[in-house]
Amino acid sequence: MTCIAIDWSGDATAAGQRRKLWCAVARRGKLVDLAAGRTREELVAELEQRIRAERELALGFDFCFALPAWHARELGCRAAGDVWRVVEERGEQWLAGPQAPFWRGKRPATSSDRSPLRRTEGEGLASRGDKPLSIHQLVGAQVGTGSLRGMPYLSRLRAAGASIWPFDEPRLPVVVELYPRVFTGAVRKRDANARALALQQRWSRAELPDAWRALACAGDDAFDAAVSALGMSKAAREFVRLRGARDEVEALEGRIFRPAQRG
Image (cartoon, rainbow, N blue to C red; front, side, top):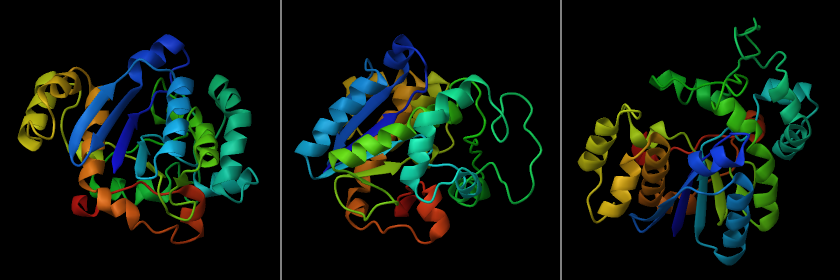
């Protein structure tokens, strides 16, 4: 199986996207490609072609696949596809002038039933000590910006023939939401020495050849993509055993893919 992990970028400029958007490819537990240099449009066009050509394919993106359920419902959305359409229509407007529940400074006050985190983040990550950011926080290149500029592409990948997990009936090729910390662990990713040490301790030269290792050490975006692709490849068998949404909340909010061996 081919496993592809994309360290996404919400940058508004083509130059920024070509610098920050990284794509890593792994097969049978070995990294076989790691590259930047594409815009979002260029990368998604390539992925659409791969989806049509390859069945044994798993794609992972590190942006939120949906909004918190309460927000989606307030927008009149009953399914993830509805959310993606609304984001495509209004996303740039939200980014240009954030209004509650979005914020770009001080977080607006909210009631307990309007959490800025989805369940998969609040229960699945924050409860384990991670510090996930809300899609509503539109600061720089953080997850909110990337997600609003990423979700509309999920409709295209679905139309190309991919199953978007957990919203669709699971099958290959499949697209899953990633949280890189699941694969990288508690490494100081902005520290080049820490990145190099983490790769040395966890991945052999057979799994991560020297040429790709040097590139993965060069920056945290490349590091996230490389380690995520390797982690996906190590867990490749799990992609054929995925199950759909467990309840109505998950069917609307989605779920971050977490390999069983990672907890």
